[in-house]
Amino acid sequence: MKKILIGMVVLAVVLGTARAEEKAPKPGPELERLSYFAGKWKTTGEMKPTPFGPAGKFTAKEQCQWFTGKWNLVCRSKGKGPAGPTEGLGIMGYSTEEKVYVYYGIDNGPMIMTSVPRGTFADGTYTYDDESKMGGQTVKSRYVIKTKGPKSYDSTWAIQGPDGQYQVVMTATSTRD
Image (cartoon, rainbow, N blue to C red):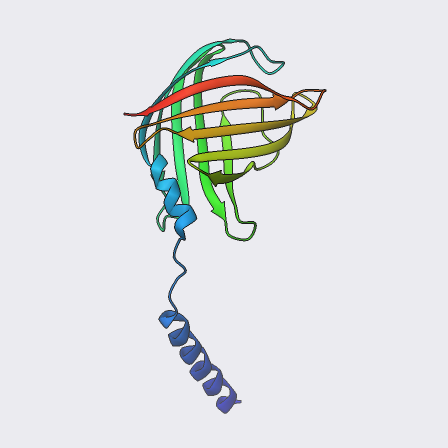
């Protein structure tokens, strides 16, 4: 029995040493691309009336920082919208399994996203598609971010109508603060 225990200890030490010598994976270029959003941003925009909220102008300030390891970018925002003060938390990342950008978000509003929007990047534009339950109904939406250089980007949010066409319900411009 003593020989078995000694053998197990030796095996554990050898495996532990081998694992310590393994290098942790490094984020790829897809994640590095998200560095564009790191820092402080000011956003101004306008909402159209929807079943999920009133129309009107909004403003927000956002700060985005990398989690240690640069696998996820965490963004906190505060602002004012047509329904009053806003506060949100967003997490941007990249799924190496699915080969898509992902976004997780919550805010101080009554609407909860029940899925994780998945996005692509091409020619300076991120396009995220989502299908969630909102207000008791299934809603397909598309969020598009068009970069305009190192210090600003435009974004739109559109909801798919019963005719299958997307209707823009939010437009915004964000500038580096």
